[in-house]
Length: 141
Image 1: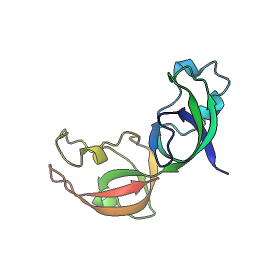
Image 2: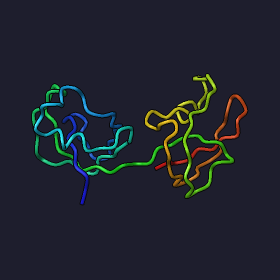
Image 3: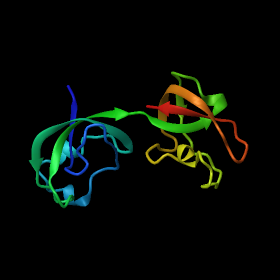
């Protein structure tokens, strides 16, 4: 059974991705909030198909459309010594202070929580680090 949520018509395209950061205050009295707020806060989702129904929304200026979604893994840089495919890791952002680094975003991913437990589903490659840490790019779920 697919997961379903509502998303603005402009974003409702198969293959598109989005992060879910939680409900907005305007959602409180909405009769459809259960469909929009049933996602995991801080997770990324991919739209797998778009349905035909549209609905009015207090948050979006236009209408929202029902879409089928699936949760997708997050890319992150983790210490090489901790990277074991299939293993569980407690994620911690790298403390480097170098936003000019090409891997800064993978060391500071938007949706992963410091102290959160994640499973390493794949190890991609070594990640260059400007301060000399031994890091690898992984996909976490």
